[in-house]
Amino acid sequence: MELRNFTVNDAEELRRLRYGELSQEDVRRMIGEWERFEYLGKYFEMFAVVSDGKIVGELSIYEHSASVVSIGLEIFADFQGQGFGKQAIAEALPICKRRGFKIVCDQVRTDNEPCIALHKGMGFESDMYCYKNQKGHDVYLFLKALE
Image (cartoon, rainbow, N blue to C red):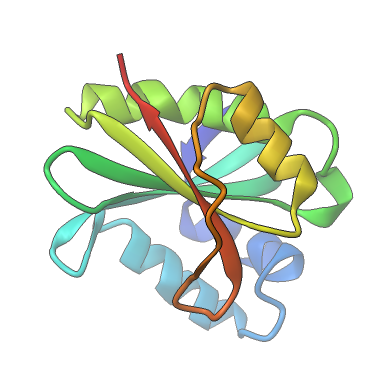
């Protein structure tokens, strides 16, 4: 398993796997935006989670402050339960540390038991207080200090 940046050559596969409501051109444009490594004036990077040459998911890293970054992970349905999420997060943590971040946070939906277990197993901490995220979902906030 590896993390790599998306390229416009991934547009059709990514559209098929995740963004079926968008045209291939819209997905190409979105990938082009990701290539700027910036969103709303802060560091942002989107990675393809790849196994045996196939895209199995996506992972984003987004800067919240000089010391805090969040990781957003989605392993596509056909590939869930195979350990790709754990491997992807394990690959992303050193990237965050190299960029100078001290804390990684992640929002996990309260109904996503496998993802909750994954974060706990990887040393993330949570008070298990339920928050509403921007999309209106009930989530727990998980934090991990980068040592």
